Length: 135
Ligand SMILES: Nc1ncnc2c1ncn2[C@@H]1O[C@H](COP(=O)(O)OP(=O)(O)OP(=O)(O)O)[C@@H](O)[C@H]1O
Ligand SMILES: Nc1nc2c(c(=O)[nH]1)N=C(CO)CN2
Image (cartoon, rainbow, N blue to C red; front, side):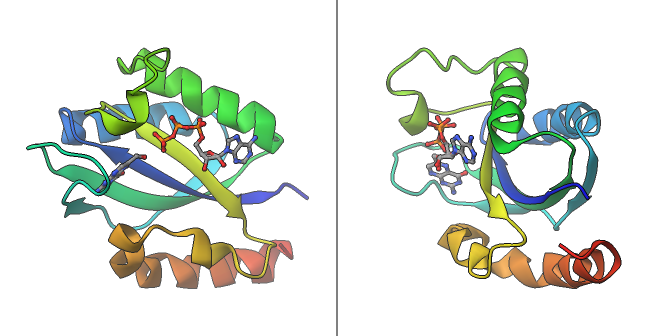
């Protein structure tokens, strides 16, 4: 039984193109199920560029460390400079984070507030995966 990861993605440089490119690359890591994507104002950073953000579920054979490394590699391939110490506060072509495993009771509490509105578009899929896979 593969773990099911709840993940978030966000971009505020060429976000539509970078979302499409990231989805292609993420598809190599397992089976992904996406929430709807929404435009959000930058939180905890200053920028004139709005973000495109989404949640997704990923059923993957990788463990969380390996998955995080692959996400970092995708971010870098799309142009993010992760060696910059201010990387978390700067405009970015892609940020992909693991929020937790779906098997953890309160994993949905890890969803950042700017993505609260899309949770309901993903929960039915989560419930279905749990039923069919026993997450
Ligand atoms: N192996 C892992 N498994 C699960 N979650 C992880 C793992 N490694 C890091 N994380 C989580 O991923 C998030 C991002 O960590 P990281 O240090 O890579 O920063 P980042 O990608 O630059 O983040 P951001 O730009 O979102 O601030 C953190 O919330 C961290 O807890
Ligand atoms: N709206 C929005 N704001 C952010 C985001 C993000 O993805 N969307 N990511 C950040 C650093 O991880 C900081 N602020």
